[in-house]
Amino acid sequence: MVPLRSKKRRQRLRTLRRSCRASRLSTHTGPKGYEIYMQSEFSRTGLLLGETNMDILNASRVLIFGVGGVGGYVAEGLARSGIGSIDIVDNDKVSLSNINRQIIALHSTLGRDKVDVVRERLLDINPSIKVTPHKCFYLPETADRFDFSEYDYVIDAIDTVTGKIQIIMQADAAGVPVISSMGCGNKLDPTKLKVTDIYSTSVCPLAKVMRRELKKRGIKKLKVVYSEEPAIKPIETGSDADTHPTSSDADPEHARRNKAVPGSTAFVPSTAGLIIASEVVKDLIGM
Image (tube, rainbow, N blue to C red; front, side, top):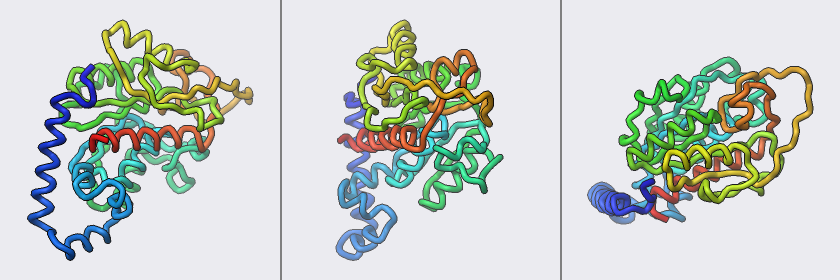
């Protein structure tokens, strides 16, 4: 797999930095330009990252697969960090049982397409952001709809193993950085979430399946967010409003057998999503 800090990546960052500096100097140099910058939505982030890095984020385009419990918070974190262009992929609608954990799930949004709700929310955060919704599930059959070379970063926040593998393989072929969320269902402790390479994971059943399948396909490395917390067996109630979760809230057993719906909380998927957003931002600016 192409390393994140590969020669090509470093060259692109240098070129983008030079371009952003030149653009900034030609449009808002001096105290007045600085005052305008500090009045923007992202001035507090700029205090930590600096104007050049904020320009890089604004010039970046990312692709998010799945905008449920994890992916919704990825989109939120990236939009609030000043990412200029985001593509979102999901074919699900907001349902009642999403309300406990998904940032877009409200009684006022029930029954609406998730990508439409996310788009409205991100535009309300940053009216200048470009949000492109794709109402479909990502599977090998729909993979040819996406040209990964058009993106600066790809985020995998879906639960189906076949889809996750296809995303990773397609990103690898395009030489585009990718980060993948492992299972967040049946977990209670957000402090057990870790960022590591897929081949350094343990405990997580989904990560185990992914390690095996990616090794077969020759993938050498993959950045992931996963939980070291053992899964908690959900209490059987005999019914649930959701029978087909489509985000990384689900575990691999559900993805393969379509049986038990995993339990979930407000704080584990959301934390995983914000961790992913932070990794994407740091990688994009070369931190």
